[in-house]
Amino acid sequence: MQDSIPRPEKCLIKNLDSGDEVVALFNPKELSIEKSVPWNKHKTSKGDNPVLEFTDAEPKVLSVELLFDGYESRTNVYSKYIKKLESFTLIMGGSNEKKKRPPMCLFMWGKNFPSFMGVIESLATKFTMFLSDGTPVRATCTIKMKQADKLTKADDKKTPMDEYAADGSIATEDDRRRPDRHDDDHRGVLDRSGNDRGEIEPGTPVRGGR
Image 1 (cartoon, rainbow, N blue to C red):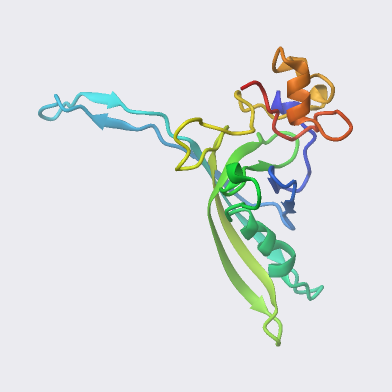
Image 2 (cartoon, one colour):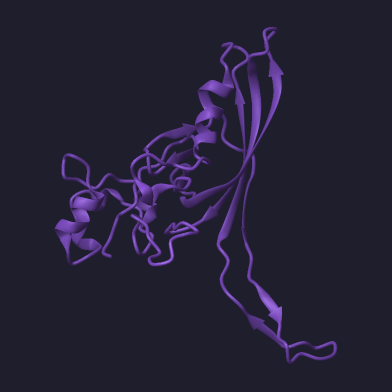
């Protein structure tokens, strides 16, 4: 399904709660995706040939390094790019108590690389060039994202919310006016997922049934 999502030539990270996005100045030279499979030694194991037991699945982790260079244009890379990236790691608040958490994010790049939905687990920034007045004009950001289809808060004991699809679906062009592809309650899916034009926007989460 995700292969038909309209994708940018430059990789980007999009905040799915606010719609904000940060587009890379330069595509990364390398990118890693790690998947851990937790096998533990069973309590009945003895000797050199242990019995292993599978405990639970672990999410994938995407790691990528992005370079932001504004030296030639004298651009403050912190205010233009990195500050927004940092906001993707901050707890949302306001009047919506359900969203007192960092946002869900989406990593996208080109037509063939699979999109990656989850949360930013860590963000490390190294500033490497400055103007004479201290303005940062070059920096490297190392980003780790942990895959997720849903989010919840630590104090949410009753329901594993979130507004995101039960099957983790990301809307394609075919979903623009086809909420029936995801739930029998067509109107409900469109109300939860649609914009003010009554369409599901490609590249955004489909909020399916409860």
